[in-house]
Length: 273
Image 1 (tube, rainbow, N blue to C red):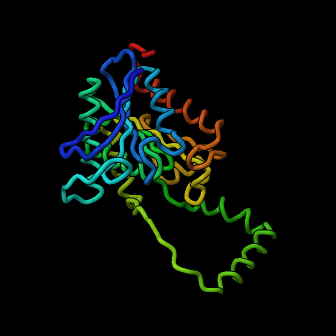
Image 2: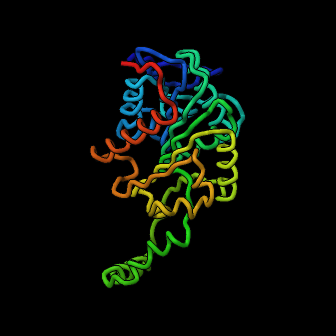
Image 3: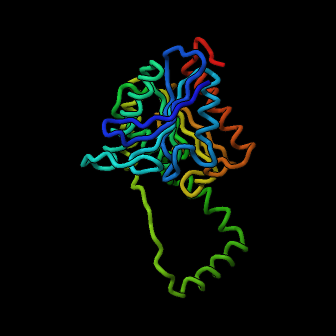
């Protein structure tokens, strides 16, 4: 395995690290997108661990910072943020192609990174797969019932609620707010259907850290209906894991899941070492 840092892009504004296996089969490369404002190493070095494990299996990888995040600067273009993200991902694909020869790509994203991976996968035909961690989903009737019914029967929960109401009577100072506006559920379903029709392989992984909007594996069907039956799509729910997989056991389970999914859908003909 060999790693090298690059400054790349038409404006030379992007920074990333390419990881190459000892032997490359010129097949599929994996690109890691920022999780929120966390720079390219990922939350608690998740992207580093996973990219090196994939390199050992024979997959070229690139973990990079999108424009204005981490070590990357501004592109100088007057693009909306969604359009700039797609442009950055395209620059990343070009770099990994130049360094490894691969022409097909899998995108990996956590949280806002999953939303950005969705946007790029939808519009670029070179993307053949995506791993969405705590990505798109929405509250459903089932999610609300699973959330509220146990609390309605819990007397201690009622006491906590009453205590919070008394405390909320006092004015609270304004807090800074950072919000990423998600796509409407109908648009998400339509775009996923288009990706599956193109032959993409899509994997959704939800953690217990997002139980505020996703709290059971059956909710995937509640959100996406018949798409859940498509052979190109899969979903998992790691109930006991937190949003960033900080615990060793949870992280190992995630790493195993990702590598098994990659091996199943994009097998390497000549494994690296």
